[in-house]
Image (cartoon, rainbow, N blue to C red; front, side, top):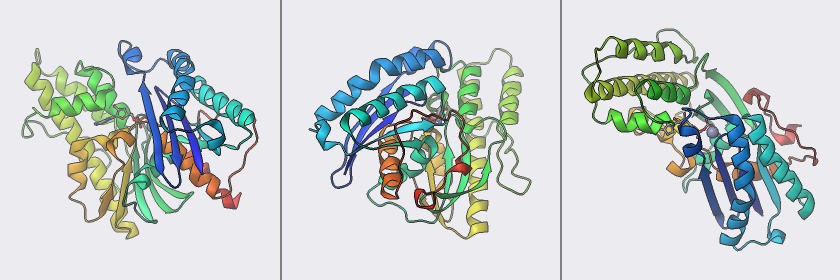
Length: 337
Ligand code: KG4
Ligand code: ZN
C-alpha cells in the first residue's frame, strides 16, 4: 500500500509518500520560516497563501522522485487538526480533491498523533505500551499509550507549550524565530554555574506543566542586568534551556515510576533539543526519538499515521472538515468507532 501524506497545519508544507513495503519513498518539507521571521512568529494568512503555492508542486515532485504515478497511490492522509484553520483547509481541500479524482480513500489525521507515531518509523521501533512526551510549538502532552489509538492523558501544560516558551524567550534575547534551535545554539557558550532557574510545578504531585512563570523569571533576570552582553545572554539561554529540560525529566521520571512502564518516547519539535536528550538519557528507561528530520513538522509522520488509521479500519467521506481545536483525548482507535 502506498499512501500520500500532506501536512499543512502551521508553517511547513510537508509532503511524503509512505509504502508499507519500501518505507518512506519520498519526504519533502518546505519551511516558511523566512516569510514569518521578520514578524517574530507565524502570520496565519501568509501561511495559508504560501501552502497554496507549495502543496501541488511538492506533491508533483514527490510523485516524480518516488516514481509513482497516480494509479500507484492507494490513499491520501492529511492533517485535519489541530492547527491554523486556513492552513489546514489547504491540505484538506487538496487531499479531498485528489482522492475524489483518483477514486481512492482519504484519511484526516490528528497532527499530534502524527508526531506521536514518528518514532515508530525508526529501524528499531518501540513496542506498546509506552509513555509519550509530545513537545511542540503548540502542545506539551504527557501520555500513557496503551496501544495504537488508546492514549491516556497524564498531564499537559496549563499555559505556554514548551516550544512556545522557547520561541518567546528567544525573542527576549533578540534571537530569530524559531527560537528553539537559536537558544540551543546560544546556550552552548553559556556558563552552567551562573544561574539556577526554577523547575515549575515539580514540587507538587501530578504531571501538569507550566512554562509561563519560567518565561517571566527569564525576563526579570535579563532586566536585572544593565546592558546585557553576549555572555549574559548565553548564560540566560543555558539556564532557561536547562530548567525546561530538567522539568521535563522530572515529570517523565514520575510517569515511568508510577506506571512501571520503562519505555519513553519523545516527539515534536522540542524533542530535537540536544540538551533535553542528554538530560533524559539519565532516566532508567529506554528512550526513543524520531529521526531529527521527523521531530519538527513533516508529511512523513502524517502519511504513516494515516496508514495506521486505515489499517485499523478508518473510513471517511469526501466532506472537507478540519478541526483547528481538537483535544487528543477525543481520539479513539478506528476499530472501536
Ligand atoms: O512540532 P513542531 O515543528 O511544530 C508544532 O507542531 O508546533 O515544533 C515547533 C517548535 C518551535 O516552538 C521550535 O522553537 C521548537 O519546536 N524547536 C526546538 C528545537 N527545534 C525546534 N526547541 C528546542 N530545541 C530545538 N532544537
Ligand atoms: Zn507539530
